[in-house]
Amino acid sequence: MDARELPRGERGRLLGGGGLNLHDDRDWIAGSDRPGWRWRRKRIGGDLLGASLYDLPAGEKTFPYHYEHGHEEWLLVVAGEPTLRTPDGEQALKPGDVVCFAEGERGAHQLTGPGRVLMVSTLRVPRTAVYPDSDKIRVRWAAGDADFLHFRRGDAVDYWEGENGSS
Image 1 (cartoon, rainbow, N blue to C red):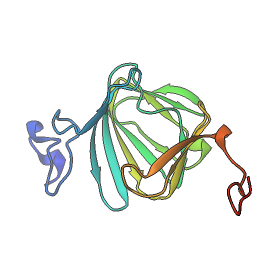
Image 2 (cartoon, helix red, strand yellow; image 1 turned 180 degrees about the vertical axis):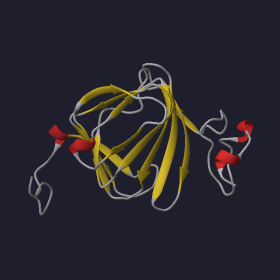
Image 3 (cartoon, rainbow, N blue to C red; image 1 turned 120 degrees about the vertical axis):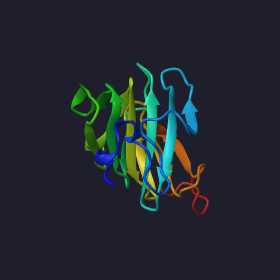
Image 4 (spheres, rainbow, N blue to C red; image 1 turned 90 degrees about the vertical axis):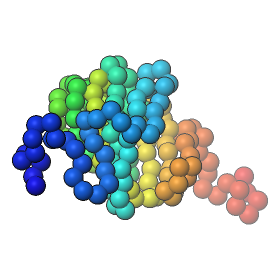
């Protein structure tokens, strides 16, 4: 049965298998209460792709402005009118808008609420994220919750530092 064939009250429900519902208010598993960065999240993942549904209050951001290497993301606006910041500036989005964030600087982005958005991404590791506003780098080497570190670029060391007694 196609979702369009469902009675109006049944649209959006899960059909077979595991998953998440984009419209209900159940099963939120995580959130952030950091001022300026408040949101709540649901997640679903397979072997190659994962997705997080974020619920963003007005003026709150998901994450700092960033771009990634070894990782691609797609955004689907489910509800609300969030503001998207990219290298081209800011633009208001609306329900149904889909945006692809390619690898590298051209895929840099930051999202500000209000809105409910689905972020779909590849689950490849290793990968890195670059945060241009704060000049930081994130390195993720495995899929575990603690398998990543953040560094300020200014803290970089020479390639040979610590090798064979060199400093």
